[in-house]
Image (cartoon, rainbow, N blue to C red; front, side, top):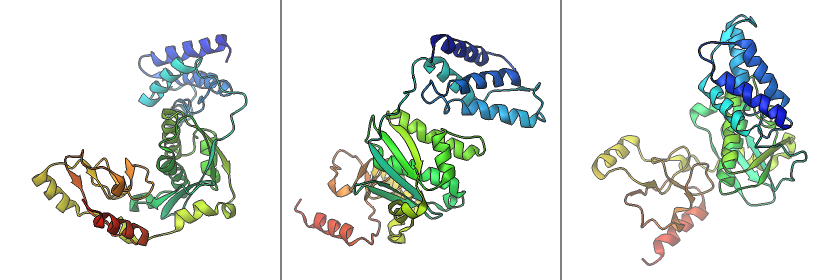
Length: 312
């Protein structure tokens, strides 16, 4: 990005962000055009122009596609204008992207999601909630990417992760850092990239035909047992809280059944603070939940028996 062009974009974004009252749609369209022209020079430029683009499109629809109409900016659009003012000359886009450090294959069915890091034993997967299972498969595929990254890559920093996915819509949204056809798909794409940016992770994606995406497909369709999704009855839990206080952590939980903000899962999980409660020192917690979900895995049950047999 040449300094003169960066200065123009900064000035236009600053002026637009400080306009009072309804804004002429052409003024917004002009700034959107400048942002698009910077795609090849500014890292994450497509991601931080979507809110303004979508606000403009929404306003045009409401104004009967009258280009002389006026509009207001959403809080997110104003936030993204600030991003441009701060970063347009600070985040140059590399001409040649660096090679990927790992390949992450993901997949989703209407009942489960799955993710596998290629060439390793790192596998994650889980059920969709009833509400999630009603969503369009395109959105579920994007959510699967997000959950798989959270479950298997949360500890990583400054890495380039290549995603392989068999859903062309998900591939398009990740590759373009969003889109305008589906607000829901655009929103989850933004969440994915913001999560990666916080960890200095670079994301790229390629389409993998479904017949080749066997490992992630297996993780997204293989059910272990509904027993693993049991949890303490909410009424009973509330009664215990009223008598004992708020627990610090749920020791045996998962994404869909944890009772506290912090929980430990028995296998890689998007929201867990740790994996395998039997390996965790719980002495620094004041109050914990120890509700053993039934497990169908003989390995997990054997681990439980060994832990119980160890001398205190």
